[in-house]
Structure formats: structure tokens, C-alpha cells
Image 1 (cartoon, rainbow, N blue to C red):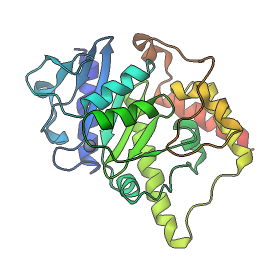
Image 2: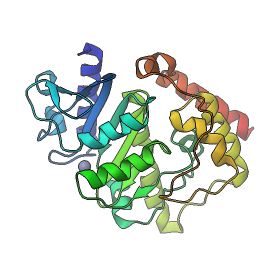
Image 3: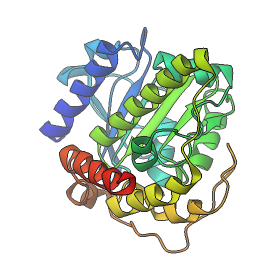
Image 4: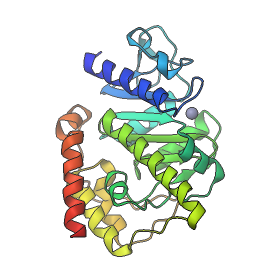
Length: 271
Ligand SMILES: [Zn+2]
């Protein structure tokens, strides 16, 4: 196992704990190491206790191939995202309280991101998937969405996010919780207002330009048509991004570069 990936997954698990986005043994993280190799956190372990010794590797069927701990039951959902999205290098699952509250209420108040940065990083839609029992049903619901979006709320459950790198997947989770917190605070004064429609197209253009995730290849498809929550979005005819997993981190901008690109693109649009 790559030392860098191991240390990254441990650090991220500790961050989920430190930010109180998980309780008990909640939450899990995985990184794609190769075609049939995935590094993952262990089951039945508080995220604060994830360490070198208890990390595991699984194959694409979810069978443990390295380590001694057992795989978590939601690994099948992670593997479904990896299978649907060759560009995805990491998946994060947690129960951040504001976003999970919105997922549980079914209010959908962050379904259409209302901050420019979120449109660029996450895309135009954060769907709430209907509650599904653990196992085949939840795998089916996430499989249907994985091609279309970069994060989802799961009704009465929590949040899944993914990205070319673990850092990007984590930052998306952070942004979802940030939106959820702002939307919740804004409820007291009448709720958030949507971004002007005229800015959405250019923001999606910036998203495509920044190469943010596989969904970027559909970004312009979204531009002039309404998106219906929980329904499949239009498929891309010619994907811009068709990177192999091993190439994804090399081809993906670092978080600093990404932040600079997003800032620059938004500044251009707003000037
Ligand atoms: Zn969960």
C-alpha cells in the first residue's frame, strides 16, 4: 500500500472525528489504488482510532486482500461509485450534522447550491436519494446517481462525496456541510435566495474548464435545462474526461491550484 495514501486516509479519518461529522463507528473512506485494489478504513472502528495497523485493502468485489480488520458494510456503495466513475480516486462517507439534518428532513434546501464556489466545485445539483436499506437497495440508488453528480445526501442517513483525489472528495463533503449550515441559519430570515440564473452557465463553464470531476463533462449539458432532483441528468455524448484511475491524481490540479482557478474564474464572472 502506498505510504502516502495510508497517511492521507488516516489524516482524513481523524478530521471527520475532529469535526464531529461522525459518531460511534460512523463514516468510512476509501481510495482507489489500482484497477482491483482499494484502500479502506476498517469496520467497527471510531474514526479517531483509524491507524496504520487497522487499514485494509479490498478488491472490486469487496473481499479483503490485505490487513486483518473486516471491511465495513457500506464498502459496496463505495465500489459502486468507483465502478461507475473511472475518474474517481476516493470516496468519503460521513454524517455531518447540518447536511444530515437536511437529508433527514427531506427539505432539499441545498439541492441547488446557492454559492458560486459550490457550483464550480460540486456542480449544479446535490440530490437527496430516497432512503434505502443497507445492501443491494442502497447500492442501486447510489449507482444511479454516481454518473451524474459528485455528492449526494442519503435520506435518513448522511452524505457521500467523491472526487479524483481524497482531498477533493473531502473538500466536497466540507462544502456540502457548509452550504447546509448556511441554509439552516438563513431559515430564520426567510431562507436562502438562489443564485441568478444568468450566472449559472458561466459557473458551469468554469467548472468544465477546471476539469472538476467526471460530472464536468456534462456541465454544459446542464447549462440550459432544468435539473430535476433525484432524476437522472442527461448523459454526456463526448466525455471530456476519460482518465484512467492511475492518471487521475497526476492530471488533477492540487487544492491550491484548484482554489486559485475557482477564485480566478469567479472573479472574472463577477467583475
Ligand atoms: Zn452511514
